[in-house]
Length: 158
Image (cartoon, rainbow, N blue to C red):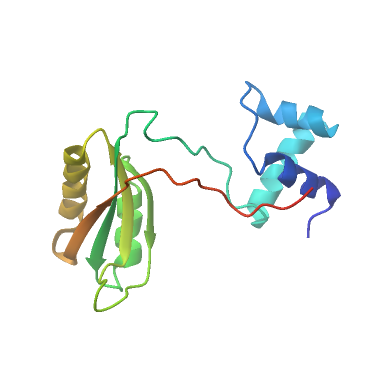
């Protein structure tokens, strides 16, 4: 369970960290807390699973990645976790996860997001993934983004 201080930290950070050199100190000042307490509490909430992550959500287009491809793969279910871990470790894969198939129309169970300055660059990265998968790959495709969708998690009120 969280207390009122943890809740205030969640509310203060759920829209993003302040874009300042020392964001945790800025939050601490806003809430009237010591900065080390803010950092300790956020770390504890991460460790207990109250919050899942603190991370950057870049605008891919603004940093030059105008081609964004979700590569989808059909691999044996008994191998998907091990193969997903290997693909997720590639430096050009931003996220990788398992999803259920929707047969017969959708045979894919492994997803890996790649970005590039062109579709050709994304296809080359998909080729590297295919080489890593080898004979375990029974089929694949690349689904390209056509627009940016706003990403946000659950919001709680103050």
